[in-house]
Image (cartoon, rainbow, N blue to C red; front, side, top):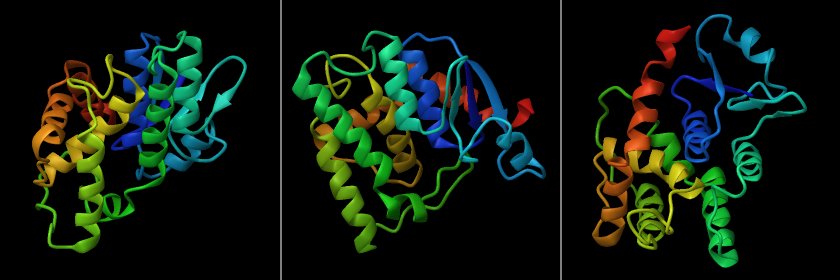
Length: 200
């Protein structure tokens, strides 16, 4: 199977991290987003012209949530908790991140370069941070549930983004934020993804 990813694509990093949690070997295809001609390469793999894309012998899956669900199925449930209510909560939290936190995304774009601290006096940013504080406070520690899973992969990139912009959560939420930042598997993905642009 091939996972088509884009440089600086947090959704690509999430899918890649989930594949590692599930111990599924994937061949990476890196598309240099924003570079001249990248649309032509991307169109060869992605019907939506977006990343990430999982290409198998039978199907092409072109959304990060759908990719995670597929990886969960082929790994006998490695990405979600075994307990049904926890599994439902994990899916709910992943879906919330997938469709929400638009202010943080817009005003605090993901970057590996140095950035200016977020304006935490901005009411819209404060609202997003407050919601993330509440979510992170639910963590069992060191992960959201007993074992690392999709929800940790999804929120690890948010923890990284918040930290980059000088946002350090408080209490148990802060402990979860730091746990994600120090998670060895996540640190490996960050290191690898920094090299994606150089691999073209």
